[in-house]
Length: 169
Image 1 (cartoon, helix red, strand yellow):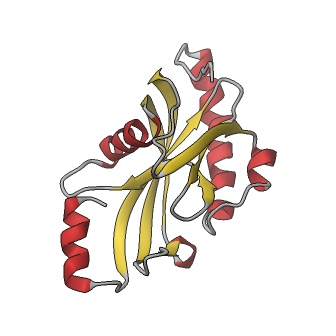
Image 2 (cartoon, rainbow, N blue to C red):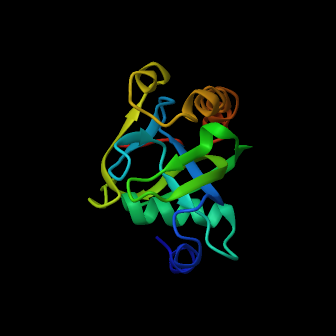
C-alpha cells in the first residue's frame, strides 16, 4: 500500500474508495498473455496496481511490473478504461475498493520474470483459452476479450513493423 493510500485509509477506515489503477497486458511473440497469481486475493490476473498521485498511468504500469515481476516493459497502446460493479473488491482486511482501470497493451523490454514473493507468487504466459480456465477477478470476462482482440489487431502488426513482442520466458 502506498503512503498516500495508507494516509487515506487512516481517515476513512474500511469505507469504499474509488481508485485509479493500471494494468499491463504483456504479450509474448505467440500472442500469449502474461498473468500473475495475486497472493492477497488468491486470483490470477494481468499484473498492475494503483496509480499514485501525480503519476501517469503508463508510468504506474511500468513501476508495478518492475516491482511485482522484476521486468521492464514497453507500452504499445491503451486498450481501454473500465469501471463498474465488476471492478469492486473487498480485500481480506476489509478494505473496500472500486477501481477505474486503465488497461495497456505491452511487451517485455528487459529483465527476467521473477515474482516478488509478496504480492505475486507465480506468473506465466497463457492463451485466451487457458486464461478462461483460471480463477480470475470478476472484471476479466469484460476486459480479456478486448485485450486479446487488441493483440490480434495491433500486436501482430507491431511484430511486422519490427517492434518486439518476444519473450524467452
